[in-house]
Each structure stands twice: as structure tokens, then as C-alpha cells.
Image 1: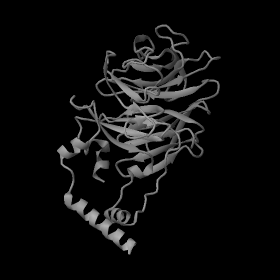
Image 2 (image 1 turned 120 degrees about the vertical axis):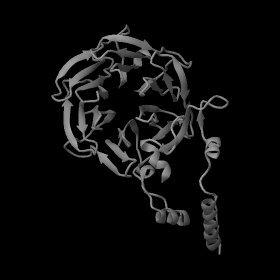
Image 3 (image 1 turned 90 degrees about the vertical axis):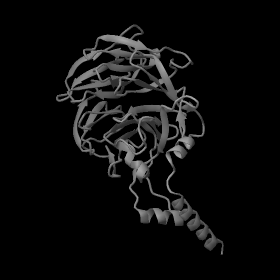
Image 4 (image 1 turned 45 degrees about the vertical axis):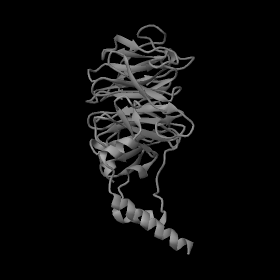
Length: 361
């Protein structure tokens, strides 16, 4: 009798939800997590948390009904310890240093695949990633000390580097055409390779290095992530010096932002970085549990996220990689909670842009 009543209640609730129809824009706005908090004007909304392949799955109406009635749970390949995220034209790539692979998730067709599990192009410890204008993927493999290039579907194309080229390869950036690859060598206590190594994107030949170990302008100490601005300038997270440094494409010093501290606009443990189409700079800080947004002049605009132990929306314990897609959506990885949180700019409707298709499923 209990089971029968349970099913009846479930059907009734489901029918009621269907009859109620979708929420109005006003209802959605009232229930949304918004940044900054009212009464300030909204600039970003928390949109979703992604923990695995099921979050991009295309589910037909029959499957939705069956799951609602039976409690069936979608199967998913979940992240183990995600490190970085990269997004190109609706395809999201997530590197995982424990499962030794890159997850490829397509919002457009719901496709899911795994990259780097076998030769050629097998990965041993994938960390930072980048994509060019054709959505070719570049992955820095710290253990193999090389950068591996795949096409947008995950097919192996090429590899650059080797044990004699890097000490502690961590992150990578590439220009739109793929002509130049910028590889970050984080170095270490006994290493002088605290720099960005610039490679020819066709041959892998070392062209020149940007920076050297130190604390002065143009010098780096434990550099981390790197991002290219729309004008071609390179922004490098200078982790050991608690700042972001800016370099021209030829490697010359152009400026810096941030300093050590616990106030907004300062850094404690800066990690991931990316830049939007307007040149605004987004920097993740694993100690603060957030990412801060600066304008191209280095002035703080706002921050998003908080440090927390429950792993809820916008709560982070160990954030690392960060990406901004073509539509202005921001993606941030948290290694501790094995998730990617997505934030949508207030100027973009939920069903707009490459990822908007997920809101219709």
C-alpha cells in the first residue's frame, strides 16, 4: 500500500509541476544566486554546478518520466580531482590529475568522451590547458614534461617538449592561430626555470623565454597560470610574488597588478587566470575561495564566491583553474569538491550563448 501511495503522490507532484509551467523571469530572478548581492545591480548569476558527464546529457521525455517515477539516477563519469577547465564553442574540457585524462563534454550534442587514456597522446599528469581558434586543445603534462595537442574531438595531433625542456611544466597558453605556444615552467626551490617558454606552434622549437627567477619587474617566482588578452598581451600569475604580471608578445615587461594581503584586490594564493573579450582579468585565489575581476588597468571590479565547507553553489575550498567563454560565462574548478561552477553574466539570458542549450533540457 505504501508503495502504491508513493507512486500516486509522485505522479500527482509531477503533473502539478508540469501544470505550473516554467517559472517567469521575475520568479527565476527572485530565486537566483546573484552577484553582487542586492540592492546592487546584478552583474552575474550562479547558473549551475557540473560534476560529470550527466550534467551535459541529452535526455528524452520518456527517460525524464521514467526517472521521475522510479527514482532512477543518471549514470555519470564524475571528476576525480579536476585541475583546469577550458571552454571552446560549447565544448568544455576538464583536466583531471588523478584519473590522468581530460574529460570532453559537448553542450551542443550531449557528447562525452575521454582524452589521453592511451597512446598516442597518453597523459600522465594533465594540468593546465588552452585552445586555439579552431578549438584544438593543448594540454600541459607535468610528469611527461611535454605539451600534447589534440583536435576538438580529442584526436591526437602532436606533442612538444621533453625532460630537457622543462623542470615543472604547469600551464599553457596559445595564440588564436596556434602559431605560438606559451608554456609556464613553475620551477622550484632548486630550479632557475621560473619563466614562460615560448615555442613555435608548428615545430616545437624554443623561440625565447619570458621572465627569470626573482622579485623585480619582469621577474617571476613560482609562476602559475597564463592568459592572453585581446590585444595579445600575456598575463602571468606570479604566485610566489603574489601578483599578476603583464608582458608584451615579445616578452618585454608591461605592468603588474595586485600584492600580498587578505583584502579584496590583493592575493593570498593566486592560481587560475583568464581574460574576457573586454580585457577584464579574472583571477582565482585558493585561499580566499573566490575569483576577483579587475579591469584592464588593474582596478578591482568585484569578486565572486566564498570559502566554505559544504560545497554549495559559489562555495569553494580549493579552487584552481578558471575559464571565461566566448559569451562571458565564467567556469571555476574546485579540486576539493570535484566540481566546476558556472556563472552567467546578467546581460546574457539563460538560454543564450553556447551553453544556453543546457537550460532547455
